[in-house]
Image (cartoon, rainbow, N blue to C red; front, side):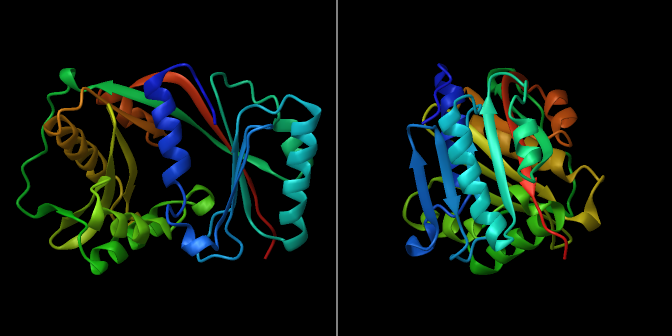
Length: 269
C-alpha cells in the first residue's frame, strides 16, 4: 500500500503493518480495512480481544484524506475508545499534526526506520552463566512475553493479542524467532526476529520495568543480530523508538530517513 522506492524499506513497512496487530485477526472479529484511494490501513479492534485500534497512512494532503480521517476519528470519539494514528513518511514535517490535535490526538513519539549491514557486525553476548535465551515454544513462555511487554511499554502501539497468534503461526511455518531472556530463570527481556525475504526484521525488544538499565535490551539485540547472521542475512532492520535509538546507533544501525509519527487519543478515567 505504501511504497518508498526501496525494497528493504518497503519490507520493513509491510512487516510493521502485518505484525503490529494480531496477524490472525481473532477469527474476523478484528476488522481490517485498506483504503487504496486514501492510502489508509485501518485496524478496528473494538469487537476483538485485541487492545489496539489504529490507522497507518502516509501524509494527509488531500481534502478526501482529511475528510475520511475525520470520519474515522469521530467513530472512536463516539465510543470514547483509545485510538492511534501512525503516519509513515520519508520526511518529518508532520504536516497533519495540527489537524490531529484539533481532532483530539496528541503526538506521542517519532520512530525511525533503521538498517544494519551484518557483514560489519562482530559483537558477541557477554558471558553470564545466570542469563539464558529461551525460544518461545510453549503457552507458558507466551504468557511470559506478554507480561514483560505489558510492563515495559505504553500500549498505544502494542497489541498484546498478537504474541499468541505469532506463536501459533510458528507451529506451522517458521515466520520468526520469538525469544525471551531469563536471569536466574526469571523472564527479564523479550525479542523477535522475523525471517522476511532478503531482510531480517527485529521487533518487540522489551525489558521488564523491574529489570531495566541492566543491559538486557542490548544483550537481546546482540543475540538477535547474531541469529540473523547465522541465517545468512546481510541486512537487518528495525523501527527505533527515541528511547532505543542510542543503543541501535551504538551497535551499528543507520537511519534510513523513514519516519513513523505516532499520534494517540486517550480519555480521562
